[in-house]
Length: 444
Image (cartoon, rainbow, N blue to C red):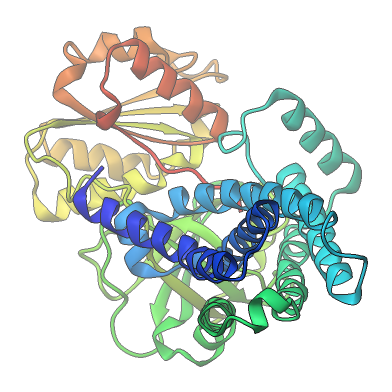
């Protein structure tokens, strides 16, 4: 762990425990029973964790720079579960000291709402790589097959947590232990106001009032029957600066296309400032509507995010890109960047696809490999009898076939969750150190 990362984690922990310090100090002066103090600490900590969830969901750039959003979102999920456990323990202990009242009822309502929304999110929205429990995977698939809830409605349900936090805040400020402790009261109120303000800024102000986020669709390119590239041009000025391999969030204002935002890897090169592009496979509710997007449609773009790039990593390492299907997109950006900058670096692309139609931009990649002699790529096709090259799937044996010494390489993996999980296992079995395996993974 880097020193800066440790520093920010320490700051986060201090902010979490600070209200409990105020509470315990006052409670001991007033002779509170130890069980009551424990109940208070559990409840206050649960509240702070719930409130800070909205900070983590606000896509704060310096947090992404230090940790990357995929890790932040995983922490977001597990802290929510921890908050639920602490809140339940608080409720259990509290019931022994306080009779049923309006204030305790509010706490119960908030807890029930948090439990329902978090359970829904885990069962309907979190992918396999983030929550690897077989029975949960099975239930998630079954529920999605039965209810077929569209993504924008799942997200809407998930965002109801803000109502739960408001109810919880009312529960908190009605407690005598809070109203009689001014430092505690001010801190807890600040912990509500600041995260909610940042969350609304992220959800509303940036989307509708920030000119830096406003783009238009400049071109729509059909790469194959179900893969499309969208090029975006900023309304005023140049596109934002980014590293090859980073991603963005896009919200489209196109007729017939859902208005919610989605993350996509940037497929264009940072050397091109006049436009920015994403290359997308049509797989779900949102992406299946991308054929309706037309030039000059308005778009909101927020980025860049992520640390999935070789740009700021060790320069002496050889590179191996392992792509699965549409997971080629960050590597398109990297290869285009290497071509434009004429970077001479040993680079191998292993690209697993089902059939030849998925080998998009093949001529361009061939051209890059021709111009950069130290760059090569091997397509691996699993289901197309026309192909005469490598067939089947990318496994440890195939990796070893093309790489003599895996310790000389940095490996970058992008593809479907199950493919990424398999490749991480393959590389680990081959003895690749953890710090030389790079990937990013998402849930919601």
